[in-house]
Length: 290
Image 1: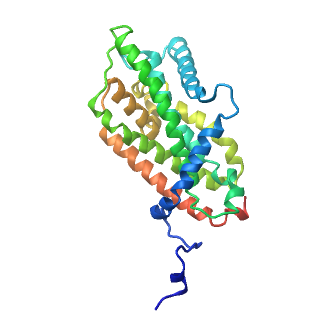
Image 2: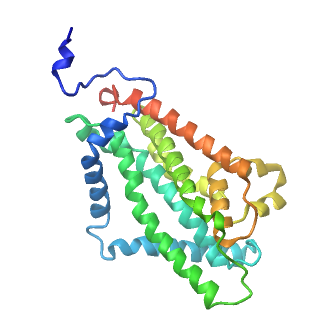
Image 3: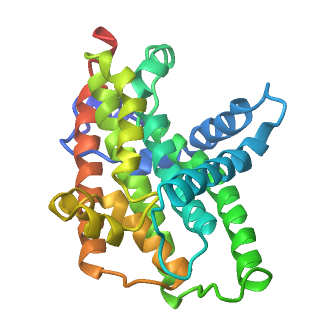
């Protein structure tokens, strides 16, 4: 016997599973996802003079400042045989993607409350669009890193001992881990800011502190040598593991710790699932509290 719901092609209900990541529904709304991605890319630098060149300027200037301050003034050594600037550029490039995913998704409900209150679509599409659109920026910065890498390998001092490793084929795994971790943390923070607005002011400050604890401008071995009592803060930081693994793949210096990578994968997946549960729960009634 057919029920009333059988008459409808799609049924929208507030009742959802604890972990609900409806791929079929997201696939139906894929055009909307691409529309949001296009919007993010076009509008971000639409009224700027340099436009997408900011994608290049930001990592280059940040790497230069890190090289001058941390390597030249503070005398923090980088991995042996790796140019200081290239070492910092690799760290900044990988860190920027995670940071942009986290910051961009951390105010999803607050930034899109007008859209969410008027029309239905899978809410998770909004933070997903941020993660996808940031891939373009990440790709451009990877091209910059590749250009400097080629310069140092072929034209700079031959004493530099750097080379790509065959395990570089696993680099997409690191990108997925960064995306899941940034998306998961972003959804958790976004859900909490619907009630606690102060969190939105702490995100930028917290991200800056996290950068210093994520081995962006120094190798993990240096921190272990200089501050062994607090090395666990870096050792169990999944984003630090990702950045260190990326530089090992790129420069061929150091050893990849499979156990740590597995830990980073597990931590990122669990964080994403927790974020998805909290996000799904919040979207049901956030419009009443925001």
